[in-house]
Image (cartoon, rainbow, N blue to C red; front, side, top):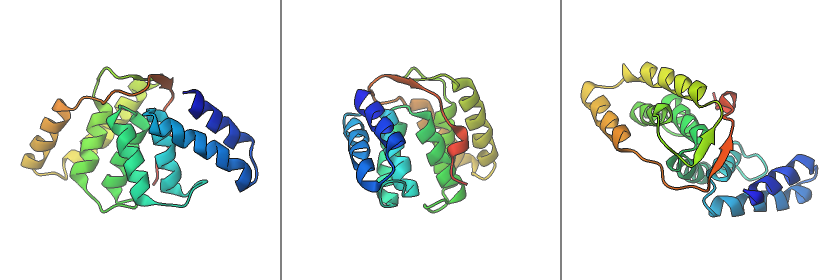
Amino acid sequence: MAQFVLGVRILARAHAPKERAPGIAWIRRAAHENLAIAQDRLGFMYLCGKDVPQDTSRALKWLNRAAARGAPAAQLQLGQMYAVGAVVPVDKAKGYYWYSIAAKPVRSDVTIFDINQVRFFARMRAQALADSLTPDERAAVDQQVQAWLPIASVPYSGFVPVGRLMR
């Protein structure tokens, strides 16, 4: 967590790209150490091309790692990306899956202060996508969601910026 916080602080104070490089390096180190919030941040940076070159495959790699560790922001971002086809082909089943995972009450190393709001938002989005799936598709995804458990992460607490989602 210290690596991530240091990276974020360096980025907040840096102005020139050369000054930002150490911050990115610290966030990348934290992501490689399996800190879900760092993986989410790095994925979002690659998704938007913020401080790193825009790279959809790297963004998906890091967002998927964060989401698998129980990071709701990454789960919501993936749900949104697949639901609307933002930088990936539209895949309503995958969108429904990630929204349903974000809505699922589960014990995780990731503690989110606004988790009830996140789950409500995710449930609403999942329900909106449910009608676009066949009953068989929905049943298959629901079965995967029920079996899903987060991979261990470095414990952390935070707030999910729902407004950050790509549109």
